[in-house]
Amino acid sequence: MRKISKTIQFGEHVEGYTIPVLNEREIRAAAGILFLIMFIAILVVIFTGNFTMLKYAVTIFLTDIIIRVLINPKFSPFLILGRLIVRNQVPEYVGAPQKKFAWIIGLILSSLIFILSNVVNSYGPITALVCLICLVFLFWETAFGICLGCKFYGWFYKDKVQHCPGEVCELKDRQDIQRTSKFQILIIFGFIVYILLMVFLFNDMFSEHPTNLWDIINGTVEE
Image (tube, rainbow, N blue to C red):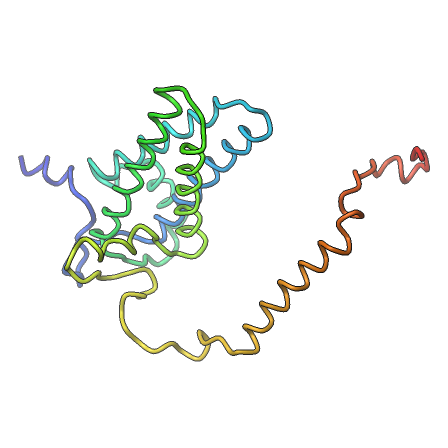
């Protein structure tokens, strides 16, 4: 019985932490792999209209999330891959409770996609929207280290969120290197204006179909 309880659990007990924790670095690595798989599968649908790869990707995604939530995150194939990839990096511990809540959201979303695409064998705006939400969640996790699902944890549980990535749940003043000046904000708006002007001025030029470089070198470009 004790062996089963050790197998089916959520989070690791690390000295110095009062609650179970997970390694945020391997979570981000796993999210990046899943994002890449889902993104490629969706691109295949967009450009070829073939849903086969997406159905496989959704099934793989759902299976991994089920293992994380219902059995144990350390048996998740993608978290194991993530652990191998970042094994030489110092662990960044995050609280397991909020991660479990976030992954339950992922379990619900991936189950909905699986039912609509694999069981019902359908497609439509609902499936597309849920896929987009999953991609956004995965992208924010891997690119910024921000767990969007964890943000909702405090809405449903009164317990204070502990050990967030980058300690963002701890109230503290930003260091000088983290502060953004008004001039830097102005640069962002200026860059947006630059992009809009580029689209307005060069859209016709950029829309031209490219020519084979070999034909340009040989001077055989057809007029």
